[in-house]
Length: 199
Length: 375
Image 1 (cartoon, rainbow over the protein chains, first blue to last red):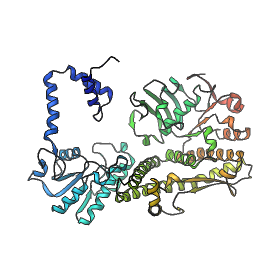
Image 2 (image 1 turned 60 degrees about the horizontal axis):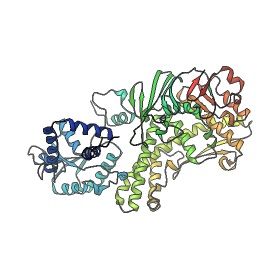
Image 3 (image 1 turned 90 degrees about the horizontal axis):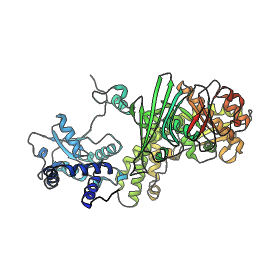
Image 4 (image 1 turned 180 degrees about the vertical axis):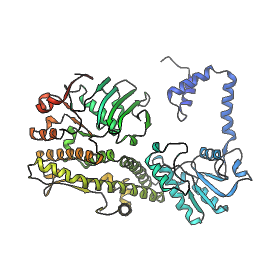
């Protein structure tokens, strides 16, 4: 391969570090940037710098925020007696899109996974316990992913929260809406059966 | 069920192959390293989602190519199904290869592929089934049960994943990187999953046992009694329900906690099970002659074939890789008798002289030469 100027190589390397971007994609993006007008590259660069400078995590729930407290924690229209525990900030956005939930959140920033070196201390669990001691919360909804690591985290949390005497619930498992029964895997179907409700 | 056609693309030494198959026996003969075993491997890969020959899926892709494809047309009572496997190696990370599966064009997870094409494999490696380590016998049972019940395949995958997590945590506790308190969840989840596997193994083995014993009685001219004894690691199953087996596993893990942390490994569970093969009052692994062990292996394989057909109501496809030359004439005849009228069989041989006339007369015969197949 012909020598690539160092400035271009640097862009490829930096882009290649991003999740989901392989070497090929990094190359393509780099050359796209080369072709792009100066102003839009400036816009991208300043957007990146700005997001890092202005966005932080909420001191209370660890969701994304522009101030010490996030917009959800500051809102006066949220039900402060219910707390929904999720793994990632993206999960908050997903739940917010449903418009079904009006309580507060707590973002753990991960799930228990010994293989990845993630134990209770690496998650915002101590912060959750402290928060529940401080705030008058009547229900904690465990909304970690329904995979092994998410289940492990939920089970661990349930155990940690039991002494606090707060009601703990787990998000229901079931069939995807708009899906066809015959395409559901057996585990999902089995859980949907055991979790069935009166109609 | 039977294989109606096989299509290969950049698989091992095959650049491209389209092969239509008859319901009867098909024989592939040719010299070494021409691609006979590769063809059977492709079928096994489609049926079992993993190659029985290698853990490195990347080896399956023809040298220097990015993607291998295997497509099998399977005719069964449920109609014609098309099963496809694609193995891709990315140029930057040669070590990891991705496997993708489709069933009638719909993407599927590997465990959802199981059972659409059921096979019984018989390779030269299987001759070690009785004499070799327990791992081979566990794999024998895993393959058999997973093809009958894909839920078992899912449970095995789940167990493997939980075991990896728990072992990682044991090592982290040993090195002081993680506290002990997280261990209970992984212990409980592992015990529940392990108990489900063990109870299923026990049940299936009890059903397989009389079938294998009957074949062995016949092969030994009524002289030897074969027995299969399940040795679950860390529990006594008997008639115990799954919950009780799970409790036993939890207790065993708690009792072994210090040892487990010291070694960074889970001490009990299905990954340590064994299935002992006994002939009369002796364990065949230790005390049987090579001839007796071969008869026992053949009995197990014939029982696998018979049991799969009985439980599923459909004949599986038999894949015989070069085992005829390893068996004496009497055992060869017994194996071939199982094919009449029985299952479709794909048979490889280095030399047609290794095969009895009776099968040559009614089989389709192909010569395999450097990744090409000639009628």
